[in-house]
Length: 130
Image 1 (cartoon, rainbow, N blue to C red):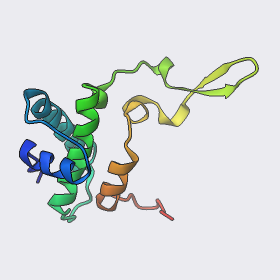
Image 2 (cartoon, one colour):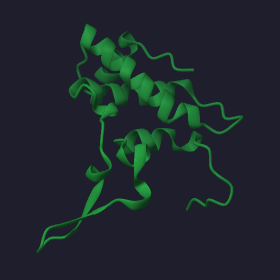
Image 3 (spheres, rainbow, N blue to C red):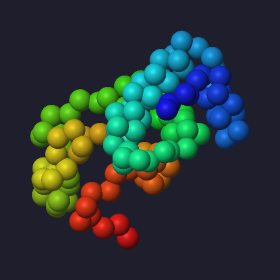
């Protein structure tokens, strides 16, 4: 399903005013980005869903752009105590992030990638979207 390539990424990026070079670093970022899209999104697509391969590849290119700029962007390691939110400024207090803990709560999210792939994601019964 994912057929992203460095050559196609270069074309995709150029259309958006970005420059991607055909280097080992670009190829490595593309592999890491493909892994991220595969394991975070594609593996969770609803049954019977046939996503547009161009949309999936575009999501990979968006992920690769972030990964190229910051290698390891999609594979950060967090400890539970790092998953917290500021709850008070005066006394500077932090609170752990309750239901967003674990891998789901620690994974970086791109709103652009989310918007691109949201329509293909499995919707659980009883969960309503507005």
